[in-house]
Length: 242
Image 1 (cartoon, rainbow, N blue to C red):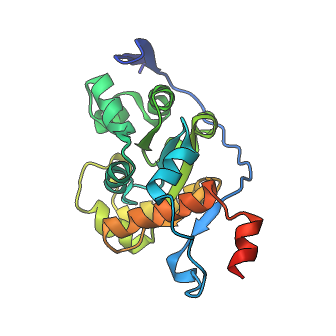
Image 2: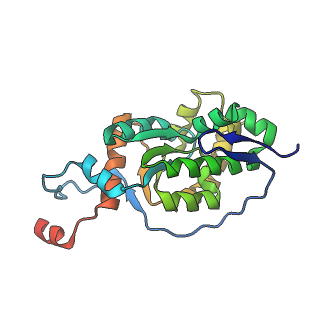
């Protein structure tokens, strides 16, 4: 199959698919890990004052919140609700790609292959990051590409929504259009994806457990984790709280 592609209607730049070899380089990064189960009940809460939504918008500046993680982690659903809470735009990278290509993600994979798809995906994500601040949900493989991770680090804050295997499988079974799960054993395929991708997702700046609870609860968890990352307690606050 030869080269191909589409023109991104927003940036008016060609987004081309071509077969390429992906290189993977992992770099350590500071990360806020948020697990409500590990929260100490007696930890003093922040003093009353500026609402968490306002603190996050101020802390973000022009940067976007970029949700990463496996299919079924809840990036799109949580992302929409998070954007509503913060009064920001929400964009789904996969939806933007399909609109630009006039093809479904499954069709792009079938016609051009995954490696070529990732190249076009990176260009669309780069354009969206320039339009920030926003909440941006990315496809499960987007963060695996080193150059895409670099673009996200420049224009956003990466948040890994991590979910257990059983939670992921219950969610993905609701949609039969996942290209990477069109296999004889989707659960084993998911296990393989977790083994390969989790170490890369772990380089994100913030990690939140996407638990089997209400979406609004996960949204709150994301906001609290981002608040801890963007607005860490000052030394004077810690002393006053003791």
